[in-house]
Amino acid sequence: MAERPQAPAGRAEHALGTAGDQDIVKGPRASDDDLFVRVGTTEDPIEADLLTTAIADAGIPVAARAQKDHLLDPLVNPNVPFWALMVPDQHAAQARTIVQQQRAELRAEEPDLAEAAEAEERTTEPLP
Image (cartoon, rainbow, N blue to C red; front, side):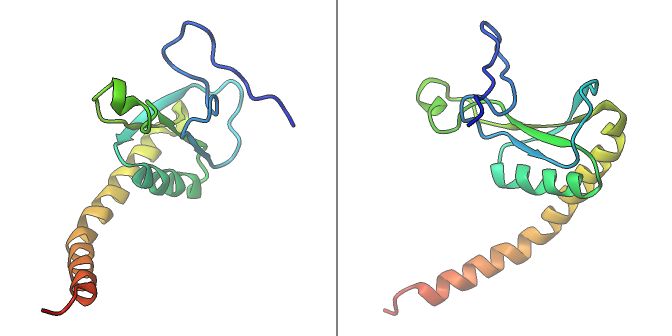
């Protein structure tokens, strides 16, 4: 089994895939020379997965980098965890457009999803 890379000592940021982080990496392999830039953030790992899938489906290398460990950090750091969506600089404009479109679609679906959840809850509630 290959040894996992370790994050550089003394750095606040971490390398992708180190220490069991919740990073999400999708899409084609990026060049070693690519400079990754942030195109958005999300507080929800499910939304991070949906957005990275949409970006990867467009053929763009993408990483959703977990900014803190959401399981341990609430004990020592009350700030909300978030995932930074990172893509190579040359794809940033296209990726931002995809993120905006996906978020608009998610917002449009919220009322239907809320109603479906309430209907499901009514069917599972015990009768008086």
